[in-house]
Image (cartoon, rainbow, N blue to C red):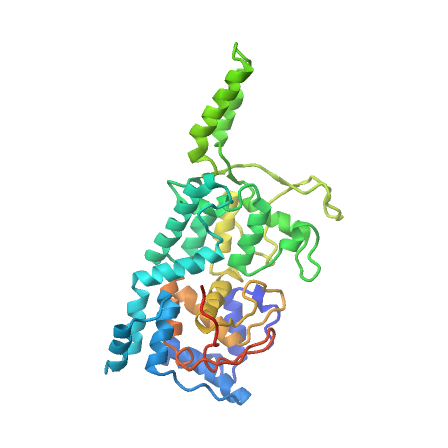
Length: 423
């Protein structure tokens, strides 16, 4: 059974199809999986490919190699001389698993993975290039770091960003929208690329030339988040200002300018620091040229990613969108984070590129990809548990492969890929 359009299938369907690809029956595979731990099950699936492809796995990495790799991958630095000697000279049979647990529990894990997520989420001190957004940028960074320190489940982490509203000093997650101040359609493109591994940005201006997404699809999806407005003034404040009587009241032009400058200085600290949930409607652009609607038509929120995708009508648009996106039944959400973390450990994903899934995209090992998705859900999106599972595999603990893997080439994971250290 071929996994046709597997990247759009719910997890249950992917698991069933992947099991059917095995030479063993699905029941036998399930029974076998229960007899071993998750890390060992991963090794079994990889080793099955070794035999099928005639591949010789890399030798196990030495203690001196592995201790350096674990420190770099988990906490972002090389071990000290003393830390290296302590590990190499230890006679404990489970010293590798203990080191993995210790590093995952350290502040170094938080710092290193903050760098990873700050890069992915494009977090920086001046979120939109304006110094007045620095308070929001600092609050956003602190929120990301604290989420990692708490080991916040990944689905909750994403959901809190998508529904974030208020001021940055109350909710640092609003930085997710302030980062794209005044660019809600661009923010939607980033959202789908980061969390769904789907690049639909081309469809903002026209139907996608190489994929199934249409411009209407783009606007239907954007309608969910369009009401999240990064603004200097709340809707209530704007209404109050507009209701004030107008007139000069004897104030000279020079005095008005002085007042404007004074208020500008007073309000500087709160500019680019607020996100408000509004009910504004999204319209198609003036240049819309397709037959399914007229230019400037209002677009309702809708999910184009899978037939029958359920989005609650009882929720407001952004909460409905966040619930749909982070659901275990979303065909891409779990797949993308499982593949990203796999690549972080091995240097190459089961799907490449990690952020450009298409309808016909297939993993290099569909059975393994489905298993990783299943474990991510079973772990309740606990990223530390997921990484611990990967780091404890024999495949990860083998010597690195120096061969450069070309785009489109299938890599069967005889060991991690040799790669440059990150900055």
